[in-house]
Image (cartoon, rainbow, N blue to C red; front, side, top):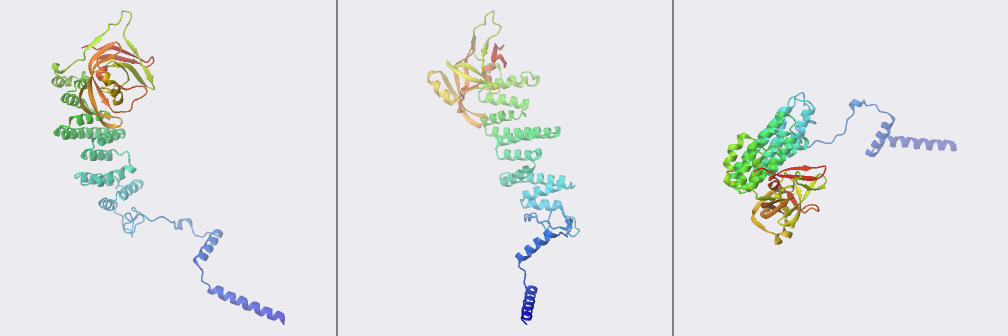
Length: 418
């Protein structure tokens, strides 16, 4: 009868376990484990019916619970333009740009309209540039973050700089616009915008008689490659206003072969206002064809040794510099034993931005066997080089016909005809 007792006990345990198992609540952990096991064993859901886990869209993009701006809801077409305008009104330029990108990716016919609306929105803000300055910046910079080479948007940025009196920012942006102007039409638009901005700047600064700053703007504009011949003529006029005859002559020299500007140049530079540097020279010997000067070549640049008011001075030849320049540190080291006459302070545009320097007249300046007198030099606070103390500019070189032999590192000078 013992085996009957064991059988009854086992039966009771099995029935109890079955009852407990049937009434047990499965915990989330148990469900997860079970789901993972079942997944490993079989997969019955078709791939196209799987639900993908995607992060929620920003609240501003999720309009009327749309999962994508370009989806439809209840068979009703999504009005892309209306939503785009709402983004602009809310100043949500990130969402507006994203919607524009989506329209491009889906080749929607609305794409050109959206860009036109974006540009028109910024132009409207530019009617009050001071009040809307931050908003304009956000709109432009957000768009350029995805379309950095968009010429139209870069020109709007240049206009914002102009209205904020940040003229160097304006010119730098115009230069960038020019580099991204891939078509003739884009180049024409950039050139037209440059001319309009220069006219605006000239008018504004002329009213305030800020001649030095205006000169600096034109000189900086020259670096954009957009300077016109009439702008060069304007530089001649501005330098004459500042009694900077040598510099004015440098720019006038660029127009000497342009017949249409000769009458205007004659009015700006009458003969009694064209001082020539006094020169004395040692005639070359009969066996010497032309005097030449040995240069020191440093990379692709050439250093020449001159005598500045009797002081041996090494200068970097720079045909792009309108005036010969030395560093303030070097000038301080030689001025006590030299004869320099102070003229005035002047603003200069350097590679590091705008700076203020001083103009002096040196009693003598010797280059090779030629001796020049009363030569203007600029003194600017910039780091000195181990190879040179400044720049040899065109106010000296314009007195000569010169040629640099890059192979032999020599400079040949011939006195220019009066």
